[in-house]
Amino acid sequence: MPPPEKDPLAAIRPARAIALATLASRVLGLLRDKATVYWFPQATADAILLAWTIPNLFRRLFGEGALSSALVPVLAETEAREGREGRNRVARSVIWSLIATLAPLTAALVAALLLLPQRWLLLFFESDTTGAETLRLLRFTLPYLLFICVAGQLQAVANLAGRFFFPALAPALSNLTWIAGAAVAGALADGGPADATWVAIGILAGGVLQVACQWIELYRCGERCLAPAPLRTSEVRDVSRRMAPMVLGLAAGQINTLLGSFFAEWLVPGEGAVTQLYLGQRLMQLPLGVVGVAIGTAIYPALARAAARQDEGELGATLATALRTTATLCIPAILGLMTLAAPIMVLLFEGGKLDAAAAAASGACMAAYAPTLFLQTAVLLLARVDYARGEQRRPVRISLQAVGVNLVLNALLVVPLGAVGLALGTTLATLFNAVALARGLRLATLDVRRELLAPGLRVVAATAVMALVVVAWRLLFAERGAAIVTVGGIALGLLAFAGAARLLARAELAELVALLRSRRQRGREPPRTMPPE
Image (cartoon, rainbow, N blue to C red; front, side, top):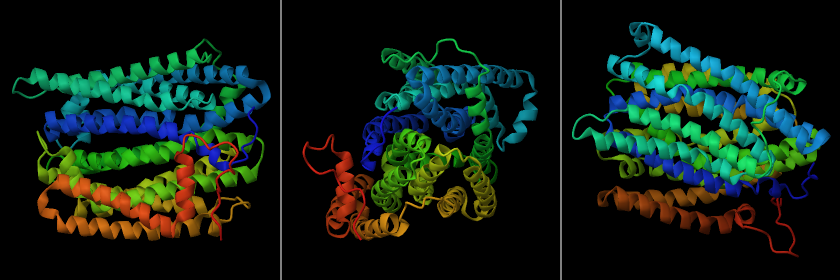
């Protein structure tokens, strides 16, 4: 088992590789979304997104959600006792148990689509056109859930084995096959409506490729994760026990996500609300994946190992470093997305079947979602401290409460504010989740005021300077077009934040630079990981 980290910054250093791979995947994701709204009208685009969202909920539960969160601590504990061979034995048993569960579930869902009267299923949709197309595409996309969940467990094993870059890059394969499907549909349309079946086939092919490529990568480094293994073992039962309460919380959260899409379908007048909500959230997901998911993925093995050693000091130091780094990256990004939301969306997505008004409406959704960039990352990091310590019930209880808050806010805000109200409801519910998790976190070694609040305020001060510069640029050049406003605003914003941070948040900027460097020079003192008083 690896020795404890002396430098907490080292625990999140793999986030650099994850961030680069995730950036490539998310950029391809933007191209995927552009292809979808370019070649398909909004009603068909809504159907494609719903047909992808439903199986993707299982990825959140079993791919990168409850199962992965329960699996990593068990693998770390087994590794501490039995070494690499014991860890691989447990991983194989869990993966084959997952396949044995999801394969019949997938078959049952596909059978239900084929056998149940369509008029029953159309009751879930406001538009029969969107509903019928969604149900048709689901016949192809539902099997995706099996492959993407297995790929998620292979990624968890790879992370514990010290492999981060390729597992984080694997989702790019699904984006490529989706784009290829949309391009084929557009090429074959010949002036008529494009057939979304090609996109559904591309989604399924992407899931298959992710499993194949992840398995090949693990096989090359000596990890035999898909070799036969017994299903009913004590470790599988331990993972199931830890996973059960998390599934409850995540299932409620994912149902809430799905209901948000149906709220947009049912209660927002006209077509395209699902697409506008999705595009607003997806663009916010680009920095979230590059920053939040990368850091959360990188530090989870370190948290699990520290918890296995019962080292509260390392837990607190790692968490504080991750939260500070996240704040330094996310707070400027939030203000940048909010101030440039409309021109960014017009620049990226206007054209083809999507007009400027729909793109600007997506920008309003993105601005409402933007604060969740930091809030979701904080929730991920705080919850994983509890998961690493084997405490699943508290974050799950708080997650369920946040789901209830979100549903109430969705119902209250969707009618007066439309799709923007749904985005705002999600942001406020995520704020509730983060605050509740932080208030109950028991880490006596963590000095919140000195290690978190004071650095955060310094970053906010530097970001305020950046925001003023970006707003002034947008007002001065509003008539020059979205490209000039967006590119110039981003460039000036980065320069303004860098200059202001050198004056107002020097320690936080130095810590971020230390993380971004490929390696520290030998013989130099390790970078400071705690800002001074």
